[in-house]
Image (tube, rainbow, N blue to C red; front, side):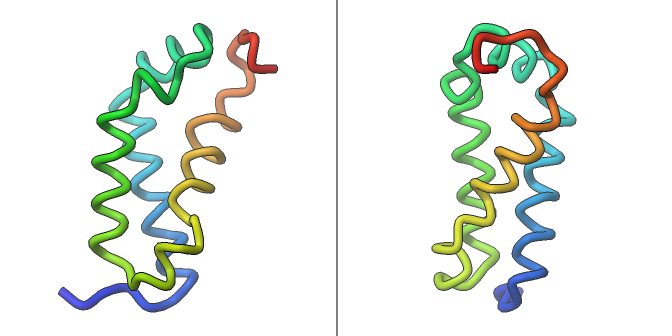
Length: 87
């Protein structure tokens, strides 16, 4: 499979991975936001997603932090309604 070479495709892939993480780990995400340990609870899942993203995009695009941005947008910002010490 060819590596993704465009910024838009890299963004879409990062957001798709983050969306899957959100879909399949909703309980952990709510617990992590409530307890302020989201990244500890999802460490394995986040690293697995990161490895997938890195394997599918060019090194230049990987360094652009699209994956990290998608994680913040989808796993954190979209859960702003959850009561937490984080906000």
